[in-house]
Length: 404
Image (cartoon, helix red, strand yellow):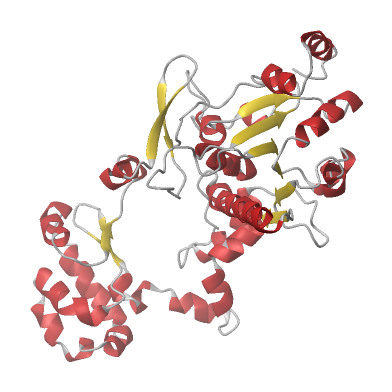
């Protein structure tokens, strides 16, 4: 079966993770995504060195994750000939996808008007840190700065009494926001199919963070900061808190229909006395005396290891989960059953595991044809020859370092 985006050609002039990750999601579902890189080192993400173990003997795992299934073309866009080759490529495209800052795009003469002059039906998609209007549109933005810090995550997730802002996990904001990029592209393709009109699609890391935290942002108009901090205290929410077992595991409850689950929970914990306690007879009482109830639950659950609680919880038809380690998540039977992890064979024959996108089409989450990330300029010959450039001309362009 062809992928959902089969027949769509995407020209991607983007770096690092945020926008390229969206290209990977499209490639997973059949789009032809051509990653345009400058001759030399190419996408700087290829050579990023932060000593976190992403570069193994066989592969750069982060590069594979965010660029699987793509093609790579290496073109010097600052040269007149290179820019003309790029524009010829744009003539064949459905979507132009970029993470370059507006001032860089303008300097390269690749603004919307420039590209639409060669392809009037081109969908133009751009992502940056802080948006494309206002004084800071050209400010550099990455997930830890524009999404995590500017977007409020570092503050709202900071535990009470903890002075320093929390550090984000690698590329958390990038991957959360890449889904919005893919949504924007899908919506623009649908609109063009319905009306014939192309769109300009804007996505920023800040906008993505604000949408994900939109419940907090909306609530902020009715509550002062100290009030909002109080409403997140665990003592107010005994039925939706996490509790530590005696062996250090945590059970997360999410009992949004507390009257339904309250009697059973008390029996499971061998604390039927709580069900009879006048302080806890209804939701209002359990909220008012939340700190006391949290202490009772903590004492009961904390007295036994997870091995004791596991058979009791696993037969209980209620919304709860064991807090998993990331290694447990990577081997979760449900995730594996749904295709959230798949394998790709890299150049030396090693098979590495990657995570699929969050959306399945016709039951398919993993790529239809899993392929490794391309080497720098690996597909330059193929793509340029498809534009009608003959071997002699191609060799001259390579000799002049216009392409690689």
